[in-house]
Length: 338
Image: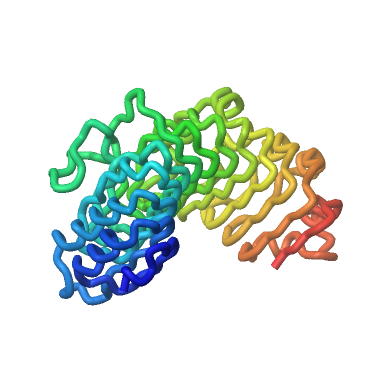
């Protein structure tokens, strides 16, 4: 089949179950720029070594710009694709045994890893990749003086990540770390000088705070994350308040708050977010009070407020309720309390 498409650029293959198919593709189609590969739904159709060989073969497509790999459920180590000098986008999902990945190549701009329950993090550049035993804590490997050009990094549903360092990701503009329930240490957040969008949480139910945010001073938040415009923050049952460092994000335009079940009121420092245009509050079951009327009036840029799944707050600030909570938000042009 591949010989019939010598100029093929985009290819999507599902249910890959043997190395011969992939070898045929990589050896006969050298023009591919976009490849999406899905593993077989039958776990008995391949072995760990076969799946790792499949992944290695993909590196032979030297013109690849975009690569998506999903469902290689036995592969433990991802190959080093540093030789793919045009590769800008890499998405890895549903690789249930995957433990580590090499740090991204210099060309990579978009890196997305999701639903990989054994994934622990990235190997540093001086460590061997596939076939070698992982270090004790690959996710804590130091990046030393290395720097990567990734602009968008997303890690979702990877509960085995315990520690993560971001010092090498100095070009990040978008960062999402979501539902990584084992994460307890995140270093280097304050070094992201170009970050514009941050989506973070929820993490371990054992924690009663965001420990890595507590380690960042207010001045660091102001100076080093002054570029941040969009923040989505996801809580869990033990959190009783928002991280205080948020108040220093003076250029924040969009704030999404979800699942802070232990939080009863929004803090008074909310009035410092004078650039805020959109505020979304979702699923905060015990939230009752907004900041004081004076603080809400300081939000002069706020045009849109949406409150969903907050039953106690809904009762107190519904349209025409006459309560003090409604008076705090009646001046906002678009209000949706549902």
